[in-house]
Image (cartoon, rainbow, N blue to C red; front, top):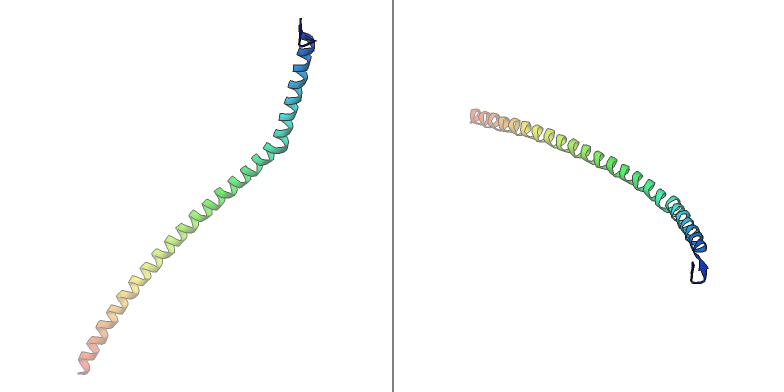
Length: 95
C-alpha cells in the first residue's frame, strides 16, 4: 500500500523517527529548562517559609516586649500616683 508515493513501512519509519526526535527534544527541554526552574522554585519556597517563620517569631517577640512595657508603664503610673499623694500630704503638713 502506497500513500503519497511512499509505502506504509516508510511512513511507519518516518513516524518512529519523528516520535523519537520529539521525545529527545522534550527530554532535553525538561532537563535544560524545567528542572532548573523547579529547583530554584523549591529553594525560593524554602526561603519564603524561613522568612515567614522568622517574621512570626519577630511578631511574637514584639508582642511580648509590648506587654512588658505596658506592665512597667502601669507600675510607674501607680508609683507616680503614690508620690502625688505623698507630696500632697507633705504640703498639707507644712501649711
